[in-house]
Length: 302
Image (cartoon, rainbow, N blue to C red; front, side, top):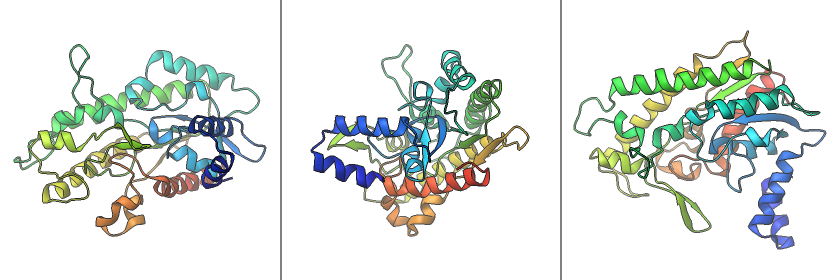
């Protein structure tokens, strides 16, 4: 049953959105005899059964299911939180005793929220890390290399290593890491049922560094430049993550960069596969899930 079928069934049965989400959760957490169980550690890209688009939901349509819900991907989760000792205790506790339906692989992805997360009420207030990574638009070099190196090659790398080491201490199942596609800082927030739930995350930070980025769907030369800056950051993140790939340790990197661009072709039509600044839409996640599924099949999983 595809998600289109689920939505149609919900309309026919006059289910509320709460009922629909409960149905999705039940579907996701109760694998069929034919599905291949996976586990996730990640953010909204791997959320699963959330009521909106994500990689996990698209993978369900391809015959996969998900287990370990108490320690799986969570909305807005930072990689720093995934590397927290208490969270990793939950993860390793489940993986050490997964029950009758153990996961065949672990999908791991994070770092996006670490870049954009902010908390003005924290002590001291926390600004988006992206603000420290970006140079003012007038600078020749758009990224502050010393900040980028510290953030990606030291901090995020350290979190990934801690997570991988913890998982490897209790299980030898394959770990498949994704590190996003190239986001577009056009100012589109995450909208659900007509309400802005979060965002925009990128455009305001670029504007603070004096980029002239109009609201979607308008374009500008600075938007083009900002897109290239985000491409460089995501490519840098992917390069760091790819360094963990190790066949002997069964750690693999699946490269999603450029996959959505290849799908929509004309750069002006990127909104056909992106839902907002940071998340693909349903069709976009189907494109990305096909890449992940191909890697899983290469590993004889599913």
